[in-house]
Image 1: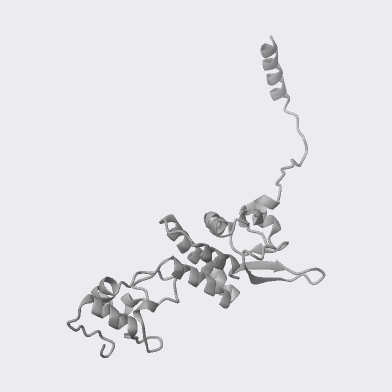
Image 2 (image 1 turned 90 degrees about the horizontal axis):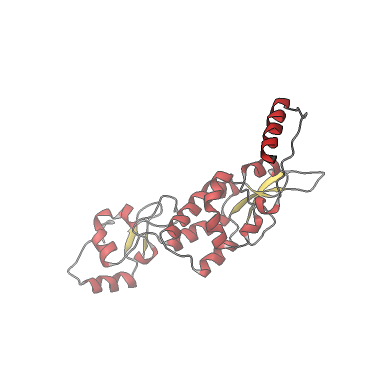
Length: 233
């Protein structure tokens, strides 16, 4: 390569693979100039994946070399898993903003038939990437968001809007809206089956009690009594 451009020599495909496998021959100019191996890159990836190096962005005119000959593929499920787990190293605010899009991306992979490996499920279950609004003990009850893992338990998943409104700020709860989390529940249960036991609807029994003054509808009573006579007859 010269000045970041690929110079193709008259080599066989196998020769190209051997040379690139043994040497760091891919030059990435931004953000930090460096030479890397093609095996550490992907050809293309969704914008939600920030950690991967997309060769298409740097060498769009070299698809035959990287994609066809060197077999550099687009981002796989493992790249999504790596990105989700990396949220544990960032801020709670970053996790709140990025977790749902990344889980949605993982769900898309699952919908396409790409199954999670047992190792991936263990990593995702143990990763502290779920932003939870924690309630401290009285008398100094102050709420703050901390990152938890599915293995931690000790917090609730808001799966109903009414229950979220009733308990938010009173118990430790995932600080993600019901609308965002509901489409991802099947995926989360696949990662860790304990999730179903962490939902508010599983932990809380809803009861509806009528309030207010009772008013008799006499005309309606008379109508029903009249019908009852015919039914009895």
